[in-house]
Length: 469
Image (cartoon, rainbow, N blue to C red; front, side, top):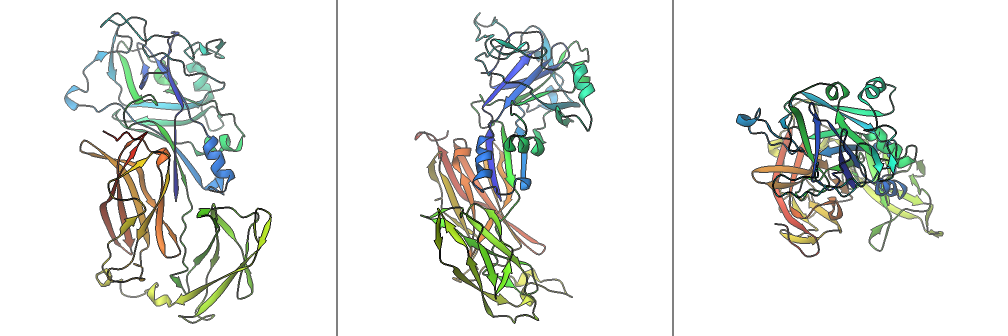
């Protein structure tokens, strides 16, 4: 399963009734009550569009897009109700709890600006990084106004809400107030990719019912912006629900199997000019594409058709690349007894499983990797003290994470590894990783038995030779 991170390329907090621009502020601050604000965000979908067009993601319906923002609030329980100065330093604010945020489409182009502070006065030193250029409550750019101040009024947003609404695309409820912001926005992002909807970005706001509340003390929630110097940059996480599980080495009778055909040029996966064809024992098969350069067929052979330990051939034809035709390719597979896969009656005794400790290659342990490369990590699944016997797992997953203080923070949550011919693997795109030290865990599942192998790999991503702190 492929995972792609798209980081925000611009953000800004706009303040009700103010010309102030805060596009360079590392925190996106949401208020309601004494003052209220809204947050503008934007991410470029051109990379995702190119991945769809080059068949890395051949089926757009298998994509899932989740917007992820990191909450700046690490609430200390004894101080949870303590007020503190608001962003304008003229009143007080409290951390909001039991509230709802909405996400709605921005209807026109806007620009980030170069402002930082909410006011043009800094009580600490008399100076402020204040600007009115770019977007703010009244203007989308320095010279163009929003359709209405703040884009939409709370009353308009209330009237827009409902199943048929095309502006408000989601709601997120917060209980305690320090939860992370995660929202599935697959439908909207796919429209951006297909060109059915112009991508002007999204706006995050308190639900209009909250914006209209009168409070003496402002209620506040904050999220790290793309200007943060921390690890917690906001991003769109895209997953493709297609895992390569090639059964050529473990082809069991009486079971649905997949047989893959790979197209590589110079060690890189490529797409053929047309879909190849495939025939098994003269029977034409339906060919599908899993990802760039990987084609497969679904096939099940009954024990009435073929005995165990029988070799059969799959012939791949119509192989065309860059206008040239290439000869058919003959691949072979040997069947295995279904008794090694299907068991009925007594439960499977996992104590009989051979010993297995996965090992990783492709990235060296404690390696420093320059940001920007795509690395393939192989997972060796061979049974201990053998050279070609593969551990009979049901699922093999990896997890990529960082350690901050005493917390493990997922960068890529548990995700299926691909199993290509006789080796399992996953890919790490370091261009989507911030400079930091990363760790990899592997989870192996067979029947009801699950084993997690912790910290099998540690590596660091660096930028221009600078090592992460």
